[in-house]
Length: 212
Picture (cartoon, rainbow, N blue to C red):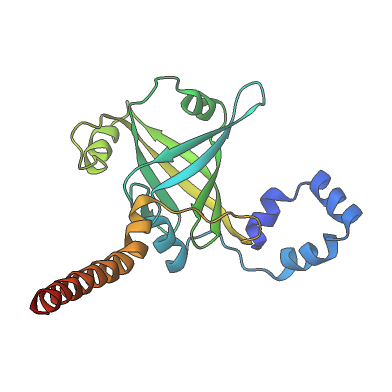
């Protein structure tokens, strides 16, 4: 737990519950001695670059939270510097709920999941949307994905305020097709070798039977 993350997340009501359930003293020490963690380190940056999806939470004008899943090729969420990340916002179902929420409140929470290794990175930040401003054309072009069928409507930049790593408890391991291919490749290679050996043995056995 980082100092900056606790400063944002541990509101007075949160602290009351921590006190009630016996964890307040532990987190109080973190607030006093923990690292700031308001800038992404090399490990966090590499972790983000390897992700092919993330969850994004915003808050509406009515106070309701809204969570959206975003996916793409690995690296579609780009690390621009230790304090800034961003992604191309592609044309989708045209509901624009997150976009409207950002007009009301630019604060955002992100979850980056690594299911196979039961790891998750939480980021708190502030959104900066580029669509109709003077910077938008250059940003949209620089963030344009390789698939020409994807239509980039805007670029969303996120200024990092804090981050924290969650413990792996209760994260169920899940694997993408790509991750399974990496695991299964040696198994398939071994099976192919065994099948070739079996075919060779069957051929030798057939010849031996014919000779007798």
